Image 1: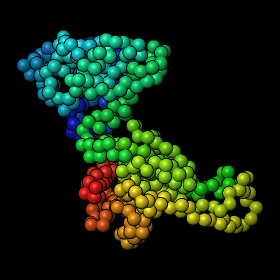
Image 2: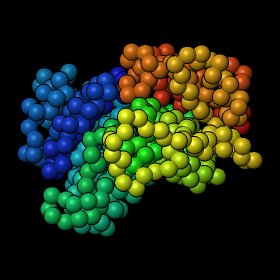
Image 3: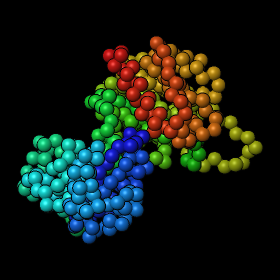
Image 4: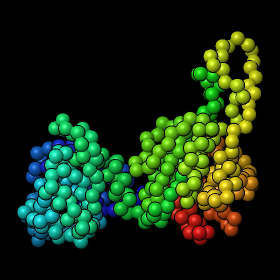
Length: 399
Protein backbone atom coordinates (compact mmCIF):
# COMPACT_ATOMS: atom_id res chain seq x y z
CA UNK A 1 0.00 0.00 0.00
CA UNK A 2 1.67 3.21 -1.18
CA UNK A 3 -0.36 5.34 1.25
CA UNK A 4 0.03 3.05 4.25
CA UNK A 5 0.51 5.17 7.41
CA UNK A 6 0.75 8.40 5.38
CA UNK A 7 -0.77 11.34 7.23
CA UNK A 8 -3.19 13.00 4.84
CA UNK A 9 -4.92 16.20 5.92
CA UNK A 10 -8.02 16.91 3.83
CA UNK A 11 -9.12 20.56 3.70
CA UNK A 12 -12.67 21.03 2.43
CA UNK A 13 -14.00 24.34 1.12
CA UNK A 14 -17.44 25.41 -0.06
CA UNK A 15 -18.42 23.58 -3.25
CA UNK A 16 -21.12 21.16 -4.31
CA UNK A 17 -18.26 18.72 -5.04
CA UNK A 18 -18.00 18.29 -1.26
CA UNK A 19 -20.47 15.42 -1.62
CA UNK A 20 -17.64 13.33 -3.12
CA UNK A 21 -15.40 13.75 -0.10
CA UNK A 22 -16.91 11.01 2.06
CA UNK A 23 -16.03 8.55 -0.70
CA UNK A 24 -12.52 9.99 -1.02
CA UNK A 25 -11.84 9.57 2.70
CA UNK A 26 -13.18 6.01 2.56
CA UNK A 27 -10.88 5.23 -0.36
CA UNK A 28 -7.88 6.66 1.49
CA UNK A 29 -8.74 4.58 4.55
CA UNK A 30 -8.83 1.49 2.31
CA UNK A 31 -5.25 2.38 1.36
CA UNK A 32 -4.44 2.46 5.11
CA UNK A 33 -3.76 6.21 5.12
CA UNK A 34 -4.23 8.16 8.35
CA UNK A 35 -6.78 10.85 7.46
CA UNK A 36 -7.86 14.02 9.27
CA UNK A 37 -10.44 16.47 7.94
CA UNK A 38 -10.64 20.26 8.26
CA UNK A 39 -13.76 22.00 6.95
CA UNK A 40 -14.43 25.65 6.22
CA UNK A 41 -17.74 27.01 7.40
CA UNK A 42 -18.94 27.09 3.80
CA UNK A 43 -18.08 23.40 3.39
CA UNK A 44 -20.34 22.49 6.32
CA UNK A 45 -23.29 23.84 4.32
CA UNK A 46 -22.84 21.09 1.74
CA UNK A 47 -21.97 18.07 3.92
CA UNK A 48 -21.98 17.75 7.69
CA UNK A 49 -18.90 17.38 9.89
CA UNK A 50 -20.63 14.37 11.46
CA UNK A 51 -20.55 12.57 8.11
CA UNK A 52 -16.86 13.26 7.65
CA UNK A 53 -16.15 12.21 11.23
CA UNK A 54 -17.96 8.92 10.67
CA UNK A 55 -15.95 8.01 7.55
CA UNK A 56 -12.58 9.25 8.85
CA UNK A 57 -12.94 7.89 12.37
CA UNK A 58 -11.57 11.14 13.81
CA UNK A 59 -12.82 14.49 15.02
CA UNK A 60 -13.44 17.00 12.24
CA UNK A 61 -11.90 20.44 12.73
CA UNK A 62 -13.78 23.61 11.82
CA UNK A 63 -12.66 26.33 14.28
CA UNK A 64 -9.45 28.33 14.28
CA UNK A 65 -9.44 28.73 18.04
CA UNK A 66 -10.25 25.36 19.58
CA UNK A 67 -10.33 25.26 23.37
CA UNK A 68 -9.88 21.49 23.29
CA UNK A 69 -6.64 21.67 21.26
CA UNK A 70 -3.23 21.82 22.88
CA UNK A 71 -2.67 25.46 23.95
CA UNK A 72 -5.80 26.29 21.86
CA UNK A 73 -3.61 26.30 18.74
CA UNK A 74 -5.12 23.53 16.64
CA UNK A 75 -3.72 24.96 13.41
CA UNK A 76 -0.16 24.49 14.62
CA UNK A 77 -0.80 20.92 15.76
CA UNK A 78 -2.39 19.94 12.44
CA UNK A 79 0.23 21.78 10.39
CA UNK A 80 2.99 19.78 12.06
CA UNK A 81 1.07 16.49 11.86
CA UNK A 82 0.43 16.28 8.11
CA UNK A 83 2.61 14.57 5.51
CA UNK A 84 0.54 16.31 2.83
CA UNK A 85 -2.39 18.72 2.80
CA UNK A 86 -4.98 18.21 0.07
CA UNK A 87 -7.50 21.02 -0.39
CA UNK A 88 -10.50 19.30 -1.97
CA UNK A 89 -12.74 20.69 -3.18
CA UNK A 90 -10.71 23.87 -3.65
CA UNK A 91 -13.03 26.76 -4.48
CA UNK A 92 -12.01 29.86 -6.47
CA UNK A 93 -12.35 31.84 -3.25
CA UNK A 94 -9.92 29.61 -1.36
CA UNK A 95 -7.39 29.64 -4.22
CA UNK A 96 -7.44 33.45 -3.97
CA UNK A 97 -6.98 33.31 -0.19
CA UNK A 98 -4.10 30.87 -0.54
CA UNK A 99 -2.45 33.07 -3.18
CA UNK A 100 -2.58 36.21 -1.06
CA UNK A 101 -1.72 34.61 2.28
CA UNK A 102 -5.03 35.14 4.08
CA UNK A 103 -5.30 33.51 7.51
CA UNK A 104 -8.85 34.25 8.62
CA UNK A 105 -10.00 30.68 9.30
CA UNK A 106 -8.50 27.36 10.38
CA UNK A 107 -7.83 25.97 6.90
CA UNK A 108 -6.09 29.05 5.47
CA UNK A 109 -4.08 29.50 8.67
CA UNK A 110 -2.72 25.96 8.78
CA UNK A 111 -1.69 26.27 5.10
CA UNK A 112 0.53 29.19 6.16
CA UNK A 113 1.78 27.34 9.23
CA UNK A 114 2.76 24.05 7.57
CA UNK A 115 5.99 22.89 5.97
CA UNK A 116 4.18 19.91 4.41
CA UNK A 117 3.50 19.91 0.65
CA UNK A 118 0.12 21.32 -0.35
CA UNK A 119 -2.05 20.10 -3.21
CA UNK A 120 -5.33 21.53 -4.46
CA UNK A 121 -8.19 19.88 -6.34
CA UNK A 122 -10.07 22.79 -7.96
CA UNK A 123 -13.86 22.71 -8.18
CA UNK A 124 -15.79 25.60 -9.69
CA UNK A 125 -17.90 26.82 -12.59
CA UNK A 126 -16.07 26.65 -15.91
CA UNK A 127 -16.20 30.43 -16.39
CA UNK A 128 -14.80 31.01 -12.90
CA UNK A 129 -11.94 28.65 -13.73
CA UNK A 130 -11.19 30.50 -16.98
CA UNK A 131 -11.35 33.93 -15.34
CA UNK A 132 -8.09 35.88 -15.61
CA UNK A 133 -7.90 36.36 -11.84
CA UNK A 134 -8.23 32.61 -11.17
CA UNK A 135 -5.64 31.72 -13.79
CA UNK A 136 -3.23 34.32 -12.39
CA UNK A 137 -3.72 32.89 -8.91
CA UNK A 138 -3.07 29.36 -10.16
CA UNK A 139 0.11 30.45 -11.90
CA UNK A 140 1.37 32.07 -8.70
CA UNK A 141 0.53 29.00 -6.63
CA UNK A 142 2.31 26.70 -9.07
CA UNK A 143 5.39 28.91 -8.87
CA UNK A 144 5.25 28.32 -5.11
CA UNK A 145 5.22 24.55 -5.75
CA UNK A 146 1.55 24.03 -4.87
CA UNK A 147 0.47 20.88 -6.71
CA UNK A 148 -2.69 20.93 -8.83
CA UNK A 149 -4.76 17.76 -9.06
CA UNK A 150 -7.07 18.64 -11.93
CA UNK A 151 -9.52 20.10 -12.65
CA UNK A 152 -11.38 17.82 -15.05
CA UNK A 153 -13.69 18.76 -17.88
CA UNK A 154 -17.34 17.77 -18.07
CA UNK A 155 -20.91 18.56 -17.15
CA UNK A 156 -21.14 20.71 -14.02
CA UNK A 157 -23.82 21.13 -11.35
CA UNK A 158 -24.79 24.48 -12.88
CA UNK A 159 -25.60 22.75 -16.17
CA UNK A 160 -22.60 24.14 -18.03
CA UNK A 161 -19.86 22.03 -19.57
CA UNK A 162 -16.13 22.65 -19.40
CA UNK A 163 -13.05 22.67 -17.19
CA UNK A 164 -13.68 23.10 -13.48
CA UNK A 165 -15.00 19.75 -12.25
CA UNK A 166 -13.21 18.26 -9.28
CA UNK A 167 -11.50 14.97 -10.07
CA UNK A 168 -13.24 11.80 -8.95
CA UNK A 169 -12.14 10.22 -5.63
CA UNK A 170 -10.19 7.38 -7.24
CA UNK A 171 -8.33 9.86 -9.43
CA UNK A 172 -7.37 11.90 -6.35
CA UNK A 173 -6.14 8.74 -4.63
CA UNK A 174 -4.08 8.07 -7.75
CA UNK A 175 -2.47 11.52 -7.57
CA UNK A 176 -1.69 11.08 -3.87
CA UNK A 177 -0.07 7.72 -4.58
CA UNK A 178 1.98 9.39 -7.31
CA UNK A 179 3.15 12.02 -4.81
CA UNK A 180 4.55 9.41 -2.45
CA UNK A 181 6.10 7.18 -5.15
CA UNK A 182 9.75 7.40 -6.11
CA UNK A 183 9.91 8.04 -9.88
CA UNK A 184 12.07 5.01 -10.69
CA UNK A 185 10.96 5.00 -14.33
CA UNK A 186 10.52 8.71 -14.94
CA UNK A 187 9.76 9.48 -18.60
CA UNK A 188 10.39 5.90 -19.74
CA UNK A 189 8.00 4.57 -22.37
CA UNK A 190 6.57 1.23 -21.33
CA UNK A 191 4.26 -1.02 -23.34
CA UNK A 192 2.33 -3.63 -21.34
CA UNK A 193 0.00 -6.34 -22.59
CA UNK A 194 -2.73 -7.73 -20.34
CA UNK A 195 -5.78 -9.95 -20.29
CA UNK A 196 -6.78 -12.82 -22.52
CA UNK A 197 -7.46 -12.91 -26.25
CA UNK A 198 -10.42 -14.56 -27.98
CA UNK A 199 -10.31 -16.63 -31.17
CA UNK A 200 -13.72 -17.02 -32.78
CA UNK A 201 -15.14 -20.41 -33.72
CA UNK A 202 -18.45 -19.02 -34.94
CA UNK A 203 -20.42 -15.82 -34.18
CA UNK A 204 -21.29 -17.01 -30.64
CA UNK A 205 -18.36 -19.20 -29.57
CA UNK A 206 -14.66 -18.60 -29.10
CA UNK A 207 -11.47 -20.10 -27.66
CA UNK A 208 -9.98 -18.21 -24.75
CA UNK A 209 -8.44 -18.72 -21.31
CA UNK A 210 -8.92 -17.79 -17.66
CA UNK A 211 -6.80 -14.64 -17.63
CA UNK A 212 -8.54 -11.79 -15.78
CA UNK A 213 -5.97 -9.11 -16.64
CA UNK A 214 -5.56 -8.20 -12.95
CA UNK A 215 -1.78 -8.66 -12.87
CA UNK A 216 -1.19 -6.67 -16.04
CA UNK A 217 -3.46 -3.83 -14.94
CA UNK A 218 -1.73 -3.69 -11.55
CA UNK A 219 1.68 -3.51 -13.27
CA UNK A 220 0.43 -0.75 -15.59
CA UNK A 221 -0.70 1.27 -12.59
CA UNK A 222 2.54 0.65 -10.68
CA UNK A 223 4.63 1.68 -13.70
CA UNK A 224 2.58 4.84 -14.18
CA UNK A 225 3.01 5.71 -10.50
CA UNK A 226 6.76 5.18 -10.96
CA UNK A 227 6.75 7.98 -13.53
CA UNK A 228 6.58 5.99 -16.76
CA UNK A 229 4.54 6.80 -19.85
CA UNK A 230 2.47 3.63 -20.05
CA UNK A 231 0.60 2.12 -22.99
CA UNK A 232 -1.59 -0.78 -21.90
CA UNK A 233 -2.67 -3.11 -24.71
CA UNK A 234 -5.50 -5.14 -23.24
CA UNK A 235 -7.58 -8.07 -24.28
CA UNK A 236 -11.02 -8.79 -22.88
CA UNK A 237 -11.42 -8.05 -19.16
CA UNK A 238 -14.05 -6.79 -16.73
CA UNK A 239 -11.63 -4.29 -15.18
CA UNK A 240 -11.91 -0.51 -15.16
CA UNK A 241 -9.30 1.21 -17.29
CA UNK A 242 -6.49 2.57 -15.09
CA UNK A 243 -6.28 6.36 -14.77
CA UNK A 244 -3.61 8.24 -16.74
CA UNK A 245 -2.65 5.15 -18.72
CA UNK A 246 -2.98 5.09 -22.50
CA UNK A 247 -5.20 2.06 -23.06
CA UNK A 248 -5.60 0.19 -26.35
CA UNK A 249 -8.31 -2.48 -26.46
CA UNK A 250 -7.88 -5.49 -28.74
CA UNK A 251 -9.83 -8.69 -29.34
CA UNK A 252 -7.71 -11.54 -30.68
CA UNK A 253 -4.05 -12.52 -30.94
CA UNK A 254 -3.60 -10.89 -34.34
CA UNK A 255 -4.98 -7.53 -33.24
CA UNK A 256 -2.79 -7.64 -30.12
CA UNK A 257 0.25 -8.41 -32.27
CA UNK A 258 -0.52 -5.46 -34.58
CA UNK A 259 -1.03 -3.09 -31.64
CA UNK A 260 2.23 -4.17 -30.00
CA UNK A 261 4.23 -3.76 -33.19
CA UNK A 262 2.71 -0.32 -33.71
CA UNK A 263 3.79 0.92 -30.26
CA UNK A 264 7.03 -1.01 -29.71
CA UNK A 265 9.37 1.24 -31.80
CA UNK A 266 9.21 3.97 -29.11
CA UNK A 267 9.19 1.63 -26.10
CA UNK A 268 12.05 1.46 -23.61
CA UNK A 269 10.52 -1.52 -21.80
CA UNK A 270 8.02 -4.16 -22.93
CA UNK A 271 6.17 -6.18 -20.27
CA UNK A 272 4.08 -9.05 -21.68
CA UNK A 273 1.57 -10.26 -19.10
CA UNK A 274 -1.23 -11.06 -21.55
CA UNK A 275 -2.37 -14.66 -21.97
CA UNK A 276 -2.34 -14.68 -25.76
CA UNK A 277 -3.98 -17.61 -27.54
CA UNK A 278 -1.37 -19.98 -28.99
CA UNK A 279 -3.79 -21.34 -31.61
CA UNK A 280 -6.76 -20.10 -33.61
CA UNK A 281 -9.38 -22.03 -35.60
CA UNK A 282 -8.33 -22.35 -39.22
CA UNK A 283 -11.91 -21.73 -40.32
CA UNK A 284 -14.48 -19.49 -38.63
CA UNK A 285 -18.10 -20.34 -39.34
CA UNK A 286 -20.17 -17.37 -40.49
CA UNK A 287 -23.29 -18.80 -38.82
CA UNK A 288 -23.84 -20.48 -35.46
CA UNK A 289 -22.80 -24.13 -35.61
CA UNK A 290 -25.77 -26.33 -34.69
CA UNK A 291 -25.49 -29.32 -32.35
CA UNK A 292 -26.34 -31.95 -34.94
CA UNK A 293 -23.43 -34.39 -34.44
CA UNK A 294 -22.07 -36.32 -31.46
CA UNK A 295 -18.57 -34.94 -31.99
CA UNK A 296 -16.92 -32.06 -33.82
CA UNK A 297 -13.35 -31.52 -35.00
CA UNK A 298 -11.83 -28.04 -35.09
CA UNK A 299 -8.55 -27.60 -36.94
CA UNK A 300 -6.24 -25.10 -35.26
CA UNK A 301 -3.25 -23.16 -36.53
CA UNK A 302 -0.57 -21.28 -34.59
CA UNK A 303 -0.93 -17.58 -33.87
CA UNK A 304 1.99 -15.17 -34.27
CA UNK A 305 4.28 -15.29 -31.23
CA UNK A 306 4.31 -11.69 -30.00
CA UNK A 307 7.11 -12.10 -27.45
CA UNK A 308 9.40 -13.89 -29.89
CA UNK A 309 8.69 -11.28 -32.58
CA UNK A 310 9.69 -8.41 -30.27
CA UNK A 311 12.73 -10.38 -29.09
CA UNK A 312 13.95 -10.71 -32.69
CA UNK A 313 13.89 -6.98 -33.41
CA UNK A 314 17.24 -5.38 -34.21
CA UNK A 315 16.43 -2.50 -31.86
CA UNK A 316 14.51 -4.35 -29.20
CA UNK A 317 13.38 -2.83 -25.89
CA UNK A 318 14.12 -4.33 -22.48
CA UNK A 319 11.70 -7.29 -22.48
CA UNK A 320 9.94 -8.83 -19.48
CA UNK A 321 7.90 -11.97 -20.13
CA UNK A 322 5.51 -13.96 -17.97
CA UNK A 323 5.21 -17.72 -17.59
CA UNK A 324 2.17 -19.30 -15.95
CA UNK A 325 2.96 -22.99 -15.48
CA UNK A 326 1.35 -26.00 -13.84
CA UNK A 327 4.68 -27.81 -13.26
CA UNK A 328 8.44 -27.51 -13.83
CA UNK A 329 8.11 -23.76 -13.42
CA UNK A 330 11.80 -22.87 -13.34
CA UNK A 331 12.75 -25.09 -16.28
CA UNK A 332 9.99 -23.80 -18.54
CA UNK A 333 10.46 -20.18 -17.51
CA UNK A 334 14.21 -20.15 -18.14
CA UNK A 335 13.72 -22.00 -21.42
CA UNK A 336 11.18 -19.40 -22.54
CA UNK A 337 13.54 -16.57 -21.57
CA UNK A 338 16.37 -18.04 -23.66
CA UNK A 339 14.26 -19.13 -26.62
CA UNK A 340 12.49 -15.79 -26.98
CA UNK A 341 15.48 -13.56 -26.14
CA UNK A 342 13.96 -11.97 -23.04
CA UNK A 343 15.79 -9.91 -20.45
CA UNK A 344 13.62 -11.08 -17.53
CA UNK A 345 10.74 -13.44 -16.92
CA UNK A 346 8.26 -13.58 -14.05
CA UNK A 347 6.96 -17.10 -13.41
CA UNK A 348 4.13 -18.38 -11.27
CA UNK A 349 2.46 -21.69 -10.51
CA UNK A 350 -1.19 -21.86 -11.58
CA UNK A 351 -3.88 -24.23 -10.39
CA UNK A 352 -3.18 -23.47 -6.72
CA UNK A 353 -5.61 -21.94 -4.24
CA UNK A 354 -5.77 -18.15 -3.87
CA UNK A 355 -3.19 -17.42 -6.56
CA UNK A 356 -2.83 -17.06 -10.31
CA UNK A 357 -5.71 -16.68 -12.74
CA UNK A 358 -8.77 -14.72 -11.57
CA UNK A 359 -7.36 -14.31 -8.05
CA UNK A 360 -6.44 -11.00 -6.40
CA UNK A 361 -3.27 -12.67 -5.06
CA UNK A 362 -0.24 -14.34 -6.53
CA UNK A 363 3.39 -15.28 -5.93
CA UNK A 364 6.18 -14.81 -8.46
CA UNK A 365 9.74 -15.91 -9.04
CA UNK A 366 11.59 -13.53 -11.33
CA UNK A 367 14.53 -14.80 -13.40
CA UNK A 368 17.20 -13.01 -15.37
CA UNK A 369 20.45 -14.31 -16.78
CA UNK A 370 22.52 -13.29 -13.79
CA UNK A 371 20.13 -14.31 -11.06
CA UNK A 372 16.64 -14.62 -9.68
CA UNK A 373 14.42 -13.27 -6.92
CA UNK A 374 11.30 -14.66 -5.26
CA UNK A 375 8.38 -12.30 -4.64
CA UNK A 376 6.32 -14.09 -1.95
CA UNK A 377 2.54 -14.49 -1.92
CA UNK A 378 0.79 -11.13 -1.72
CA UNK A 379 -1.88 -9.06 -3.42
CA UNK A 380 -1.30 -8.43 -7.09
CA UNK A 381 -1.15 -4.69 -6.36
CA UNK A 382 1.78 -5.14 -3.96
CA UNK A 383 3.47 -7.69 -6.23
CA UNK A 384 3.19 -5.26 -9.15
CA UNK A 385 4.93 -2.55 -7.15
CA UNK A 386 7.74 -4.92 -6.14
CA UNK A 387 8.10 -6.21 -9.69
CA UNK A 388 8.27 -2.69 -11.15
CA UNK A 389 11.02 -1.78 -8.67
CA UNK A 390 12.95 -4.90 -9.72
CA UNK A 391 12.44 -4.18 -13.42
CA UNK A 392 13.70 -0.61 -12.91
CA UNK A 393 16.77 -1.94 -11.12
CA UNK A 394 17.62 -4.49 -13.82
CA UNK A 395 16.85 -1.99 -16.63
CA UNK A 396 19.32 0.53 -15.18
CA UNK A 397 21.92 -2.20 -14.73
CA UNK A 398 21.77 -3.12 -18.42
CA UNK A 399 21.38 0.37 -19.93
